[in-house]
Length: 468
Image (cartoon, rainbow, N blue to C red; front, top):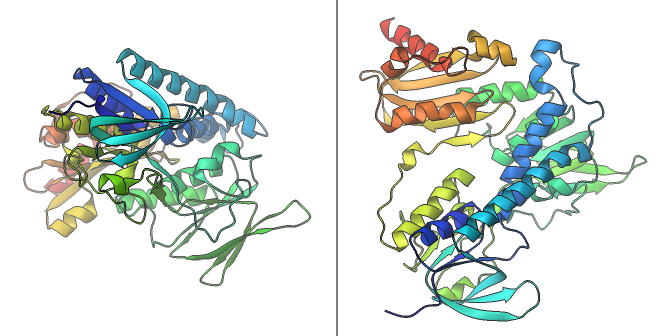
């Protein structure tokens, strides 16, 4: 057996890399983690998941959005909300998460190296130190590529980070706009469109697909679209953007967006969100016998191995679903497989959380999938407004939907839109995991008053549909 400098070298300190490194360290392996940024956490902590979710929470609080059902549409905690108001909370949470991540690496004795990594050969990686100390070459028996992604940019669009920007540049905006157009209605685009709309900003959302979020249950998406329109978001779906250009005027300038249909949209700022590209361009993958696709992503097998068996890839760099929670699990499973440790997760039961306003979460299959598979099913629904908790918190539009087998009553899917959806979904996830029926919810007592009661109400609704 060859003598390597490290048992495992992880490239990138985001959710996948962080969990891969710590899992390998817990197996008593010698582990190093290379991070080219000055801070750990990757896009998740510094630019993406944590900032956007904290920004969302700050908006919901300061705008008084959650209380408007009770106190009226004009209710707000603070008038004239500024960028600084929103960033105060965001910066605090980011710094806390960075500290926690770094402490976890330290106490598990993972060697953190602030350097940019590139392959020299399949087992050798060159580490170029970010503090200009030069470089050194290290060898590793196993390597995990967890470099994440960056916002995809069209080279024909004049990005300036001020008027025309990507989601990676949200935190550096000079001021909040009065009007905003979001190009791309994927998860990130929908999240930011709903967040800015909750602030009272006039938002236009453009996408070339005929519906929002095609992988989400259609009824849940329809509910989201209703709420977006209710918050004065203009949806231009099935529309293609031909050009985006800055426009100067007496008020300091804005942006003109030209659509293929001939429409023109004039807006103060434009958020370009048409996907993300794997940050693999500077890894010199060819030296390791690897190649990325046209979006910088790496192909892996069920164990997260690339074409080189000892090189793994996990997280956003391998593509959909690109969720932090799933990236963490991918990193853990990759490290376990690298050292022959039995570990498994049921991928069909990975939950999805989409932090739009209102929040969406789901686990299991949806109606469209089941219809395509020819599975006989029935549904049971419960509205938040039917529960005391829904009235207490002021969310009277939330919906919980159970999908179950028509003959066996086995639970097949849980789909929720409303406050706390990403927490509430885990009750259904547990029942799905043990192959339970909707009878479980009928026979279970839930705390009162809670949103969890929606499970019981939805199960009764489903049973009534069966009887009829």
